[in-house]
Image (cartoon, rainbow over the protein chains, first blue to last red):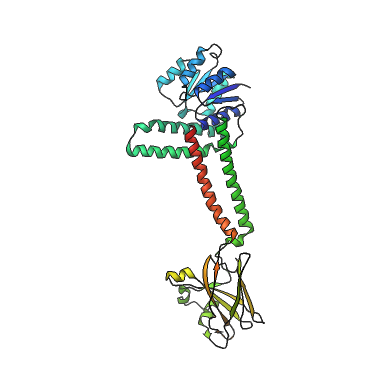
Length: 121
Length: 275
């Protein structure tokens, strides 16, 4: 079973994402802040990281940068799911190595799940 | 690709939380009434999010889902506890209504007549109550006497003596109505005296059931054959208190409302504290 780590500080949404991904037959781990999330990814080495950008302790950009600078985690695909919808945020996220960038307000989770399946199929 | 109910549900949570985040971010950029409106929208959206996200607390803890376990367990326990309590209270209430309907119907009157001003002035053709009202008062018929009033397992019962085989007419007035200075409408109930002159009147939901309060009553006898009635008896007083089951049923409504409010407030508070 493929393993996904969800880094999302909003607990209600984090649970909804977990349930959605569990329903798609993924193993799901999660963290509610950037620091704990980074440690969890380095420990678990998941198949994919679903990353929020606005998080306490360490924001998503820093988490992404850190992952991509670490040889053990740089190959792990990261998909950003954020409230930040500005073009510069998208460009920054993709430039740092994110596989894709989704804005929460306009994302259908069934499409996101399909995308995740394609990435780690 | 078909979109499942779960997809729609989780997507609606995603969009709603994005909406709340957007409103929160924009809170500092607006002033005055627009700011107040935004606060109200955020509170409304938070409540909606809480309600929509309830299934996530009912669902089992996802395997390997490590984040916020303690908060999640607390929220889940609280939510399930409150929902469970609400459900149990509803079931109990339903059971009480189905099995103890007699205690619920406080004002249902079937075989008695309430005399009202309108009724007296309507010029209706004679009815039993009219017969009693217009019957000639005669000393030939002795006034009944109420000898005992007792509350037996929540039912008030009256015993007394009256002329044999006469109709015994009870008139009750609620003391609070008398004190208010309004036109008092006595409640009239009848029962039948036996050949030995004894009579009983039992409070029964299907016959009469007085709302709670302090009452003054009097009683007279009526002979439908001779169309005469006796003078009113001495007055007597009694109080009707709500039965335990009625109190429980009424309290259940209040408890339900408070619990429903608690569900919303606790969820709202925890959402604010955790996010």
